[in-house]
Amino acid sequence: RVKRYTVRREGANYVCTCLGWRYQSKTKGEARICKHISELRGEDAVYADAADDTGTARKKRSASSASSLDGVSKKKRARNGDETDDGADEKGGGDEDSGLPVTVALAKVWKESDSVAGWYMSEKLDGMRCVWDGVSKLWTRSGNEIYAPAFFTDALPLGTVLDGELFLGRGQFQECMSIARRHGGNEADWRRLSLVVFDAPEITEDFATRLQAVRAVLIGYATPTSIARVLPQTICGGRTHVLEELEKITAAGGEGVMLRSPSAPYKGGRVSDLLKVKKFIDDEAVVAGHEQGKGRHSGRMGAIMCTMMGSGKQFKIGTGFTDAQREWNNAPPIGSTVTYRYFELTTAGVPRFPSFIRIRPLE
Image (cartoon, rainbow, N blue to C red; front, side, top):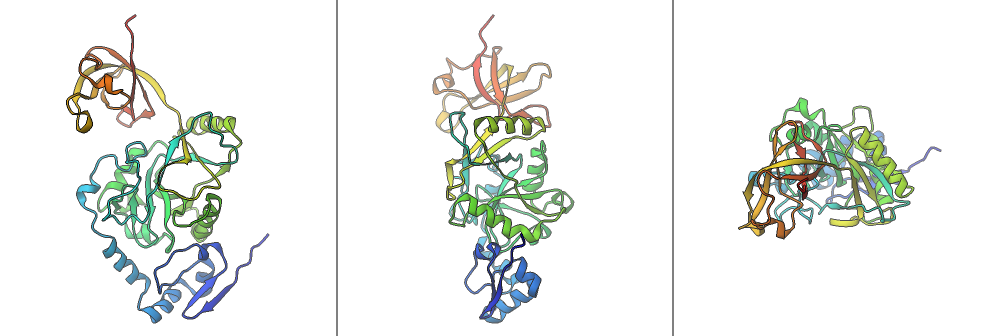
């Protein structure tokens, strides 16, 4: 069935009855735009109308926004691991001087006892989490600016804050991060990235409605070469369905599964209505050394240096230990064999996100 929308003029601006227009946020005096208004009048004409009334045109808006949102230091941006899913702070937001418009939602780990029938289920992408501010910039979830080329941000819809992930492809996390973190990045590299959108944080409705709004906002941008696209979602049938989907995705080289409550509003920080399901691998390695702890672990063990079985490559394990195991008299001794869990091997052939499980008993 073909949906019909009504476009009408109100004062200097035009309004539309579609969701894409309805759910856009805007600064006072600025025009909203959607696919239907753009088709009818042309995007430049719409912003020219607003400029006649307020002196604000699209390019001026981007320039002023760039100035007001600036101020994120290079030192903050250089912080290692602040964009990764397992290494970020629990709040999911930046400092007060950050231009990040929202505090992002962070997933808790799904337990098989959790009832998720009727929830939305999607692939957990192996990319860089980011927020489009609806104006001119992309931000990491910690509030650091992502220096995307103009061609990339110019292709994103104005007026709606979008939560998504910069994505290069399955198994290409490190290359994706390398491209996205580079200041003054190569345009050819950025043309390989896409923004996969899964939420609209500033829409004060449930997830089902927000998803519908995201689709409406991006409908005019959906082409085979789109920079932005909506993450496909399916309705979860329950525990068995989750495990089947996890097997299918991981077998194809994917990271895991995400589950979202259909009735939940968008909330920042670590939330129970957003769950992640990942598959880890257990292996063994030989302890080659220890690192001093820092912060709350000062004066005791911070990490162990390990040598992989077979390849002989070295890597560090810094998580999974109890406080007692971090005491020097209880730390895994050099030469002992430990069992650890990790997600996958990096392109350098070492474990990604390794976590300590136990010391292997002597046989």
